[in-house]
Image (cartoon, rainbow, N blue to C red):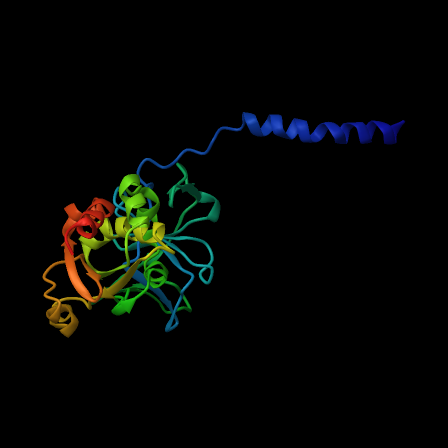
Length: 272
């Protein structure tokens, strides 16, 4: 009898657990420590080696950076104004879209003050030499895959953009064309609007419209690049469209890149 009672009770436990879970209040986000979104402007270096798996997030609201690295253990929080560094618990983070919020009552502990050193920030981690450095720009001829590997934040913008369906349908049926895009990973306008064209590129994979990307070094050197000068590129981003090896049009700037499928389709539909 005892065994039967235990067995029958065990069958009830999953339902009881579901009921308890349903009654637990959802974790609420901190009123200030929220809205941490991925950034690509910086890299994390540990003991002289780039931590390629590290992920950095910035909250404009909190004026702070969230640092996630398996090599460093629990998350770190860097306050921009005071340079104070706190250690959080992994359970203090709430996934929020592409980024994170911090729970209303985080279990954080102060570990020291970061030290700015010219263009780097040295973190106060005992026994480790940890620095936040500007990410080197992507330079020269590149592919879509290389852009996304270097700057994963572009993916967020791509996912948020829906190209014009009619223009995309027309581009699928267009004759061969090559689109060469000049950009800078350091360029603020590019960060905002280049993902729109990247999404068009992704949607036209396998068609006769191909895309190439050319990254500029940080200014002023980038503007002295012979490729930039010979193509008379004066602003970023700029897309130059070719057919049969001849330029047939170009577009650039925030307005054109806000509607890249329509602009590209209009250029390719024009006189040859």
